[in-house]
Image (cartoon, rainbow, N blue to C red; front, top):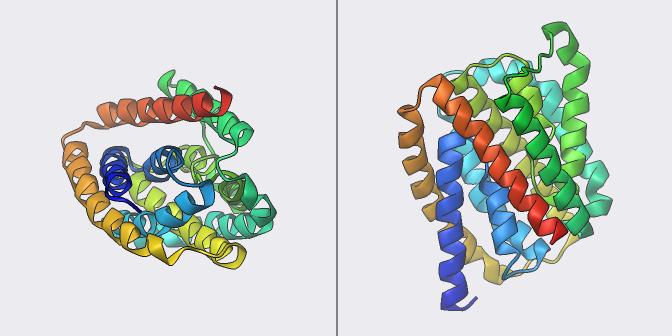
Length: 246
């Protein structure tokens, strides 16, 4: 990897880490889309694994709610693993045009619903079966696109978590998704050892960006956070849709 490409890669991880620090997501989506400009989709996904895992673990443990979230969300996360592995046959479609466009449109639609204050609600008694269903669907989409957002994020928003619980729950879900995708990549492709050091560098700069983003988030009111959260989803969705359709 030449110096100019390496600088481009590290800049991407700083920006993606900042977005993740502010709204709790965006690192895989931003990174996958921009890394694919200079790397193959599978190389981009492989380079993303370590920065995504480390930042997600940090987000997962950075708060007091992990124990209760583990108890509540295990059906979702088991479904994520099973869906990712079952969808491994679609790995060659990582970053595919139609998959990215469909995912982008879905993100925009969900964000518009959220901005319009049409709140989706999943009653506690339905979580037992809706959790695994949402997880398996998310896993299948992860295997096809490398993005962990839909429908896990709408599901987590619908079960009534607070702002801080939601951010920590996203870290938990994305950690599980990253590990499941890493296992799929390890079985399916011959990874280039030359990606190891750029990936480690990506961890360092992504953590810097994430810490800056977290500092911004701490200053946001719940209403402002909600606006940033859904605006971020609109931006991510528009980018994915445009990349897939143009």
